[in-house]
Image: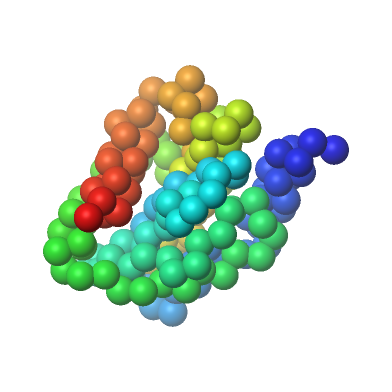
Amino acid sequence: MNIRLFALLAFSISLSACSIFESGDDNNYLVFGHFYGFCGGADCNIVFKLDNENLFRATDPSYPGEVAIDYKFEKQSKAQYQKAKDLIDLLPEELLSEADGTIGCPDCHDQGGLIIEYYDGEDLRRWRLDQSKNGLPKYLHPFSDAVNARIKTLTTP
């Protein structure tokens, strides 16, 4: 079986089996990040968690195709939080109408993918989004651009 197909299948199973982030409170939050399978280095898999007051960065992000995802987050500065705080407000309402899971074919042809997880205080929703605009509905184009821009801003010294 093709390794990419296996990784995609393993991730799909893991979506129903575990959460990218386990929250102990009722605060809204957004987990966002990107991942690239055939990539080497610290920037291949970057994941952040944004709540109403803080920004956190995963200290050990793994490729989301792995079955067990247990990210540990480290609080970032208030200056970093200011750079990303609007992302929760930019989350399209249409995305909340989509089923949890995969939209497009993230990282199927080495283009990478985005991780999005949203908790509204009651419901936890998770998606993997294609990095290629051809694989996304048009309503997601501005949001995927914003996520990529925030990741770049947050990781550029």
